[in-house]
Image (cartoon, rainbow, N blue to C red; front, top):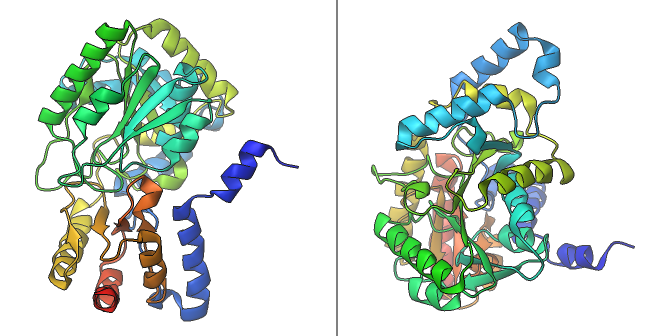
Length: 394
């Protein structure tokens, strides 16, 4: 029999993944073209041409043993050095390869750093709405996730409640900007105030509180809005990055952690994170794609495609009577449900062959997440269904 912990996880399996599977079931009945699946953040934009060219060139011209073999748990030294140089040029930082650990996507990176930092019953704070897997990642290491309630006015973090809920057991704060599911970018003003609170509480409790910034959507920002680079504002900051969205490579599972020299207990954290990479079973990040992304750090996906989708969906939903803050980044729209029960609203949407995810999966009921990283025509064809849906419940 499976463990009790896994029994609970099986019972509470990801709503997002369940919707994705439901989409495949409905497509088999009604045809793929008649099912409008907005459930999963699976990029619809092709990877940049540089990615394909890099793969072909590496496979054809580099030593196969080197391409596919083991390396340091941190990753290839030259790849890490190249990434550090790229970050420094973009954000005026001073990182070296010793500050970079290659990871199996952002999720792998989060698990590595939480494994590194957490003792049983340590508290990790996050702001609702949040990526639902944070619950499981923290629970993996017997930590406690402390959720700060959503500020549904503009979805910037609720800083007063955050300040009140920090305790002597608080080990870390996870933030995600641009945010999944709202698409909101946390402003510099917010980051400055948040950092001040963290420094104040570290001094009050005599502890180290680590700010973990989960950044898979950093490159997907619209209207020239800047995404603050958080190591500039708070010394105990650790960055988790992924190329899943920035290069449309979610299935390749490639990313990195940035652990600055200024982080408290840096030497031990770096050593422990390398060991965590090994004992969690990752061993190292995928070898081929370490080489690939090192050649593609300046490449970008066509964000204009996502922006077209954003504008089409946002303007039409508002015209139908939906309420929603306009996303500033990522490719999600967090829409207030016209009925109180967001799960029931998603069930009603399924009857229109529209698959969306209830906000309660992100710690914020009364909303739904719509992933608009789909074909433009999918949104066009789904719009009558969205219109009929709100008319049905009004």
